[in-house]
Length: 71
Image (cartoon, rainbow, N blue to C red; front, side, top):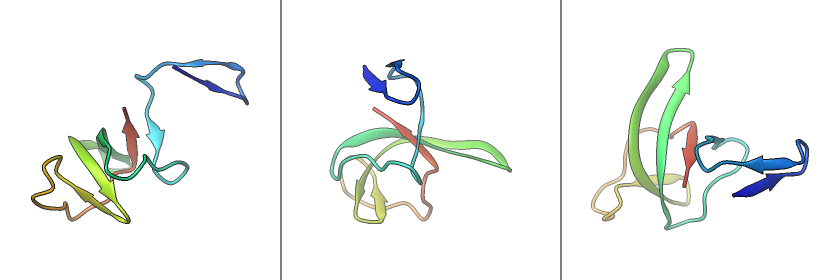
């Protein structure tokens, strides 16, 4: 668990983080999704390398940028 200083309370690992706000560390596999005006979709485990998002085995990158991630 981490602490959000603005809310001064523990955040559970079930909470999604916006990619626009905070990106995960490079090379670490995380759960991702797209959650926008068109709905919630594209749930999958990916890892970030720069601005690209790859499958966990690094075999291929996806042609979109997730909007949210969590450990």
